[in-house]
Image 1 (cartoon, one colour):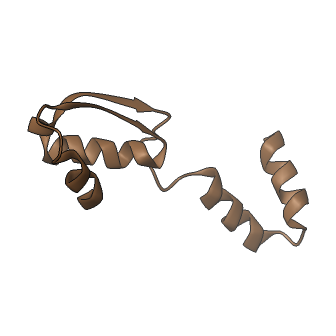
Image 2 (cartoon, rainbow, N blue to C red):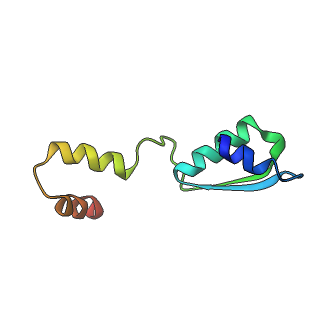
Length: 79
């Protein structure tokens, strides 16, 4: 958020901010803390629990099952 704030200081008007996935969480928090810097906020594919991603699921499954990375990715993709 600090880097985003530093970048947006160069703009003299509020901006349209778009965030996707985990970046959407950052965009949301930025808009929450600096509403005067934001004209509009668009969030795409942002879950209500940002830590519950397929990445987190993959690593939990990796510990539980004794199979290759490729086999596990195929199982996750199918589910």
